[in-house]
Amino acid sequence: MKNINLETLLENASLIEKFYEFKKNHYYGPNVDVSNYKLEDYVESLKRNDTDKIYFYCEEENEILSYLEIEYYKENCCFITDLTTNKNYRKGGHASKILSDVLEYLENSDVQEIKIWVDNEKEFLHDFYKKYGFEFGSAGGDMTEYNLDLNNRRRVLWLNYQKQEQ
View 1: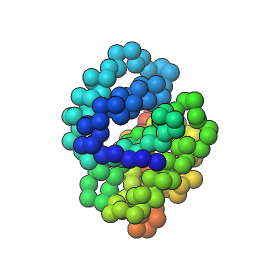
View 2: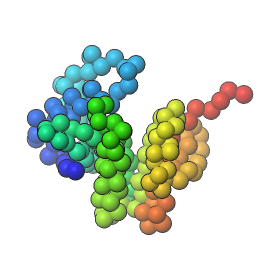
View 3: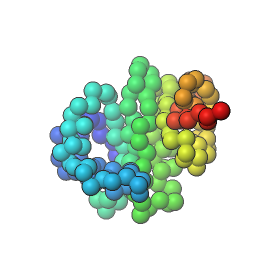
């Protein structure tokens, strides 16, 4: 597993292009039109980013297999904002491997809490994160959550939640 911070990434045009192609081809679902998603737009979005991010990725033969992004939210807290596996390598344990490695990396850092947002419709992801100790809680409003408190070994995942009409 490799990692790179945003400042260093912005100095590496070939890696930016590799991340852009990976996200364009593997992050978005089949119902999302990515024909207007341009490299220049991706670069501009990186430059506008005012948060502290670290990008983790696994590659083999110069091809990204899995990608995970963390964003430091506040002191001792971060979000996993993106975890994607190359469509050609899914079900091969790559997401599990990168998530395990990143959790180990974060456990050896000052981070005490990790949060994740996941589409409520992707129930398979709820089970996936629960395997790593993420527990259910309530954020109130339109959110459902799971959380990771590294001090207490409690993990929290925030899920998009749509209340049912009554």
